[in-house]
Amino acid sequence: MANVVVVGAQWGDEGKGKIVDWLSERADVIARFQGGHNAGHTLVIDGKVYKLNALPSGVVRGGKLSVIGNGVVLDPWHLVSEIAKIREQGVEITPETLMIAENTPLILPIHGELDRAREDAASKGTKIGTTGRGIGPAYEDKVGRRSVRVADLADDKTLETRVDRALEHHNALRRGLGIDEVDRDALLARLKEIAPEILSYAAPVWKVLNEKRKAGKRILFEGAQGALLDIDFGTYPFVTSSNVIAGQAATGVGMGPGAIDFVLGIVKAYTTRVGEGPFPTELLDDDGQRLGERGHEFGTVTGRKRRCGWFDAALLRQTCATSGMNGIALTKLDVLDGFETLKICVAYDLDGERLDYLPTAAELQARCTPIYEEMPGWSESTEGARSWAELPANAIKYVRRVEELIDCPVALLSTSPEREDTILVTDPFAD
Image (cartoon, rainbow, N blue to C red; front, side, top):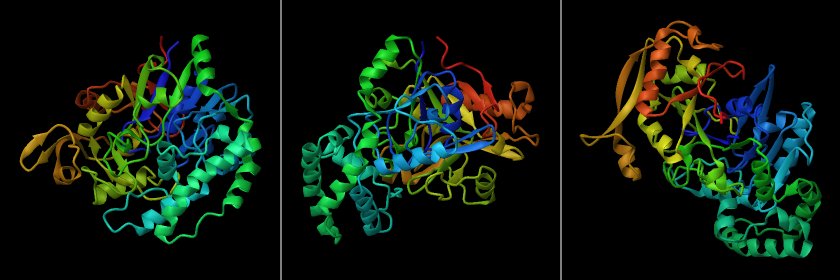
């Protein structure tokens, strides 16, 4: 049976939640493989809205196993709060429907405090634009081999040793930033209090998933953020703290690369970005304002207004390559309804030289200006369309041109937040 990886192909906020939910109906397992609760996935099912951060999108579907993999950094207090909130909406979550990898690193209160303190101390132009939730510092501790992991909660002596190691590092940083040192006993008390609930979901996820695969179960790998925020291949340093591209799906849950059969990139029909960093096609005019208003472009997690711009095919070619995408799901096509003319960035001008990719160096990125191709828009509505026959001719031409420019076919087309308003072209789960 086919296993599918879903990744955002831009700077996040592409509509992954809806697509993952749409696909999860046919999956047996839905596994989160990276990121933290800085992710924001909004699902609309039968008119009911679910907003998820740490939980995999599959939790709202009965009879599915949802997994938080070791590639995630997990805030245990946020998770418990999110579980309670989703349960209030009538969703059953139990250790039989949710598993957390035992080797998942935890986000501690000290991580969020450090995250916010460093961002506040950063001078203008050097701020990254983080959510302040401690994601970056938690990944730093993982790489620095001083994380507290889920399995450590099971033994008090081990937990104390792990906390002491982390505090040796963090208290030194806090002194330098003028922050009070951490109350060790208070932190340990909080961890020991929440340990039983977190441990009730703990499991050797790598083992469970490999057994599921051998049994022929379908696995849907769910990422957070977008490929242009990847720590290696994104617009560094204005990126997230983990690998977002599809290759991380295997590492982030403990499976081999052969477990991935289809990579689906989620792509908006235009481009948005939250926070700082380069954005070649950003619009600061009435068209940008119109895209933002029609697309309701405010961050699910932060509430921050998203920057909006024309579709950037040059960047999409890059992310299709770095994630090895087999197809894309094109979302929010309906937001383009009513535009007389649409523009697509096909390349960049760098000091008179034409480039078909965005260069790596930040100073070169800043000097790149988009080279546009114009296409006629359409006046008809595409909202809610569920077949190609319901789309205006110019909308179909736009989609086909996008496919040509990014060298990747459209597998799914989304025309509203409702899960059924989706046109299936290629089934990612097909054997």
